[in-house]
Length: 61
Image 1 (spheres, rainbow, N blue to C red):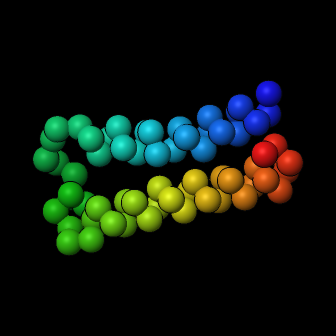
Image 2 (cartoon, helix red, strand yellow):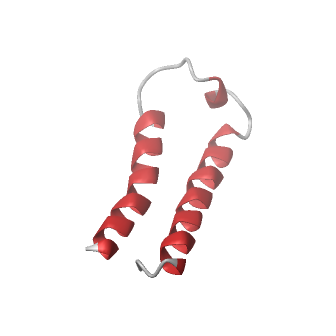
């Protein structure tokens, strides 16, 4: 059960972030930054890697 919970938590991060950035509106300042998209992708990947390491250390994965 812990494995399912850990993977669900890891998958929830990019799902939420992509859901917010996938909306059709133009009022987010980072959408107009030169490196806004790569920064968001790096943050998403970093959070997923950190969560994976935490769950691996706690033997949930």
